[in-house]
Structures are given as structure tokens and as C-alpha cells.
Image (tube, rainbow, N blue to C red):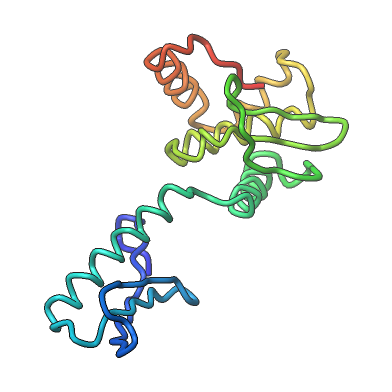
Length: 177
């Protein structure tokens, strides 16, 4: 299903339907794209429609971005690597946040990452997670906090990336939390 470059390409099953007259329908069923076409269509036209529907589904999947479950798994991996697995939280999820890239409520263990971050490179998203995870241990942005965050090897690079991105978008200096 995944291509070498990391993109997702579903298998396609084309089914000619004598009941269909003009329309083509497609749906994902257990990772397989089922394309229903009118039975009168030529094989070449069926293949053209199959490719068109595959491209449409791939765009929808890309736009949807990573899920909260994937974010949670990514945080668990970073917790093991950076924090020796000692941190505990109640939930980690994407949220609509216009001004911040992330937020953490240490008392309740709730971490939110801006849904805008789903489009960022993975190493930048990892930095955001490490930043918010560190707040579970140190709520402020003091020296101890930055020592924890700097356990992520791409901290400075990711911070620079976010600053440049925020500057380019005209947002100025965004807040991480």
C-alpha cells in the first residue's frame, strides 16, 4: 500500500455494473478502492476512471492528515526515546488552534497539537510533541524545561523552521503553548 516515498496507493477493484447507466462510484472498503462503472464502458475508459478515482481518494487521504491515534503513538515513541518512558498523559490530540502550535495542561495531562501541524514535516511535529511532553514534567519555560526539550536532537532546527514559517505567513512569533 505505501510507496517507497511514503505516499499511500490503494489497490483498485473495478466492477462493471449493468444497473449503472452514466455515473461512476468509488468507495474504500478494507483498504481497497472499489470503483463501480457502467457495464457498457470500454476497458480503456474503465482504467481511466479507476486512475481518476484513485487520485481523488489519495488527495482526500493526504488532506485528512494524520489521526489522533497516530499522534498518540508518535508521542509514546518520543516518550520512550527522549524521556525514558517516564511521562504520563491522559490524552494527546489535534485541535483547532489558530495562534498556538501546541498546548499542555500538566494538571490534567491533556496535550493538544494544532491541526495546522499535521502538514509539517515529521521531524518538526516530533519537536512540537517533545516540547509539549516536557511540560508534563516542567510547566514553565525555565532552564530545566529547555534541558529536557534539547534531548530531541533537532530542537534548534525545528524551532528555526517554525519561526521562518510563522514569519512567512505573517503571523509573527507564534506561541508553542
